[in-house]
Every structure is written in structure tokens, then in C-alpha cells.
Image 1 (cartoon, rainbow, N blue to C red):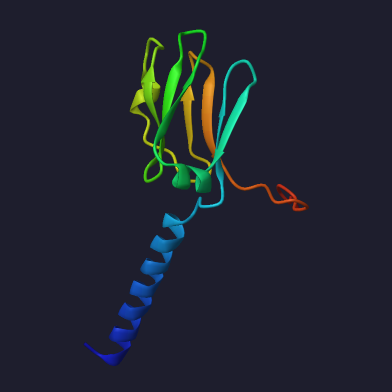
Image 2 (tube, rainbow, N blue to C red):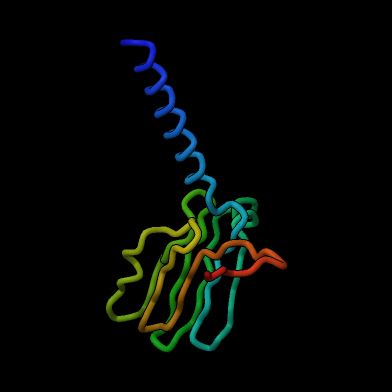
Length: 126
């Protein structure tokens, strides 16, 4: 192995480690927001979730309801649902910005949102 090969390998390993660290800590300051059909919104910050620990919360709906489980290591997932198709039960846990779990028959939506930054625009178009 030549000296240049070693530097290229070292650069690739450093880049991979940095990317893994960035993806692992991507949603540390955000919050999980759950909105139901009546317009009620329930939010919990990911930092609070990590301190509080594992707990569940039930949201009633027209089809009976859905229960989310909050796990500090994995994020939020659906524990049980009374809707007829139960597609939301097969959703992976969410814990990164932009991930969503939707229960369409129950009209309930869980999303991981980024922390609000005051004074900064949401988007800039040119």
C-alpha cells in the first residue's frame, strides 16, 4: 500500500465516521408532534422523551383510537390501532426530522419536526 493509498483510505474512513455521527444525532433538538382529527395537537420534545423514558399515549378517533409508544432509544411507533386496515402498525419507529406515521382511517398524524428558530425564514426561493 502506497502513501497516497493510505491517505485516501484515511479520508474515506473519516468521512464515513462523520456522516454516521451526523445521521445519528440529526433530530436531537426537534420534537414529535401528533395531530388528531379534532385539531388537537400533542407535542413532546425529543430531549424530554430521552429524559422521561418509555411511555404510551392513547388518541381516540372515529374508528376507536390509536396508541403510540414513546421509546427513548427507538423513537415513536404505533403500539395498537383499532382501524380496519392496521397499516400504521407496520410503520417503522420515527425519530428523525421529516419522518411521519399516518393513520388515515383515524385521521391521526405523527411527525418529527425540527426545532423552531425565531427570526429565520422557513425557506428562501430565488
